[in-house]
Length: 316
Image (cartoon, one colour):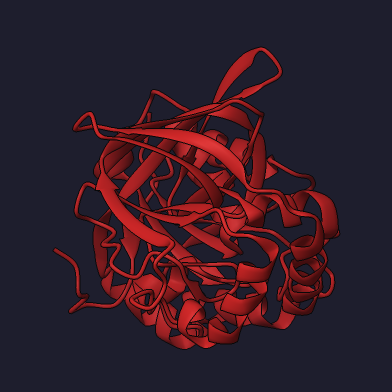
């Protein structure tokens, strides 16, 4: 099989802040830099997964993804769901055009097209960890790979019950969903078993599993996460009463900024594998996309794919 030197662009035209002129500018800049490329546009959910697999089988190894965190997730699953090409032989460049764009916040990827193209020209990349999680849809076990944050609890409850699938109101829609969810969400008892054998039995309000730091349009949920250290950061918000929840919202700025020192019900753990079980079904989000239900098994794939980003990053 011939290996392409061209970049393969995957475009999600339905991502939250997609602008045709922005994409046209990308193509013009690549042409000006004499970087050959081919382009495909997603037509339906999970199409990016298949496009990535097809492109790999055709010899492409360099990808530019124009979309949001969900599109990145689909491409990652196309890459790690095939056996022909080693993921660390693949390079990804991300053009943020989603609603939240949370992955780029940790990775310090610029929003400006000109700056991203400059990074692509010089192929400035780092090897990032990837997470794998298994879950169930009814009685069938499935798996998903993720590059940013997965989790369960309140955020999944809001997404399942109060957010429109097209995310047409962006951050405002999420804010309204949070307010609605606070009145009806019930904490769930879970059991977390870490790699070292430690067990955490608690009711949770929310649990986030971070390779990177941010989720939910800029909330610094895993403030100490390092994308290439071979570990997950688990941020556990233990169960709170309705009154406690509303009381803590007075400290919303601290929560958003990941300053948890004044929150006794928040604990952070680190592990490269762990499992979650629960008496009642709880559901999963992976890079903001809804998945199936518990039980869950998480494992890390250390430094497993190249991502274009800035230099002098604060990684391990």
